[in-house]
Image (cartoon, rainbow, N blue to C red; front, side, top):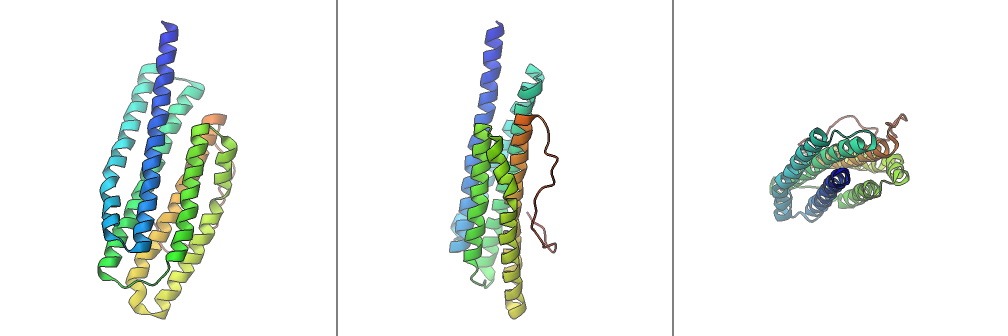
Length: 235
């Protein structure tokens, strides 16, 4: 009977981790779709990204409800409890990442519908590629419980900040050169900030992986190179 209970508990933990992995895959797809829509000016794709968001929200709620139920039923301790708490934290970060992608898609529709926009796709492509790489890498670190790989993501957060700072200055220059660019560039500034925030959430996940495996929170100060303070990510 004891072996049966242990086996059932292990299966519940594996199922929870698998749901997080599935949610991560859908979240990555949302990032790709949002940026492709922005770069190509594809309103239809942007709308598809917006419409896919409720499914990710539902996955996050399902993971949360399942995790709470397992805690109530099994009363886990130590590493088993950290596994569940970690899954809940990561699902929350993934839900937020998907929200940020949705917000980019919403702004694509506004820009393409009414506003002239300068050509800054190169900066967004570079920044989104790096943000997506960080998300993929940290989800792989979670799947493998690889603290070293998670810490590589954590330490590299400044790379995305540097690209954001560059894109921020470029967009401000366009706004100063021609007031007609202000509307579109304001939306693009929010899009850039959303990508920077996606990188921050990847860093959050890296910290969670460290906590899950090591049992302690990181005490070091998070590396940040974001020198801007004018705008925050909107939803």
